[in-house]
Amino acid sequence: MLRVMLEDADYCDVAADLMTFDEEAVVFWREGEEVGRHRQARIRSLELQDSRSMTRRIRAARRSHPNAFRPWTAADEQLLTDLFHEGAGKERMMETLGRQEGGIATRLRALGLLEEDAKLL
View 1 (cartoon, rainbow, N blue to C red):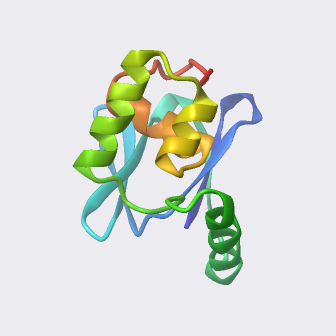
View 2: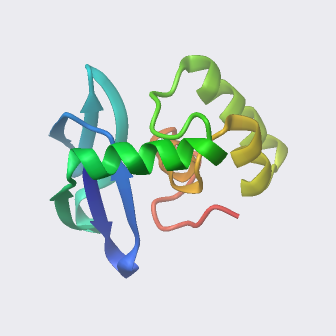
């Protein structure tokens, strides 16, 4: 698990076992699947998290967001895209997808639907 510290004191935790660099972006992978990406210019630091504490945090997150830290499927991405185009707010997206706000925002950015500097509303 990596903590990605971003500008404006923002951060996200990424369950990744590999990171690569692609056209000014850092791409995070887990078990061969892309799980996130951020523009290099936006990243301030990367911190390796204690895997034992992350296991507890993942379990806690999944109590209210059952899909937190799970890989995105094509069906998940399609549903997210549909919700985004319908103008669904972050609360509805979180409830429908069972994911945390940061995971949804990261995936929307990866899909090119949310600008890098934009916040999820």
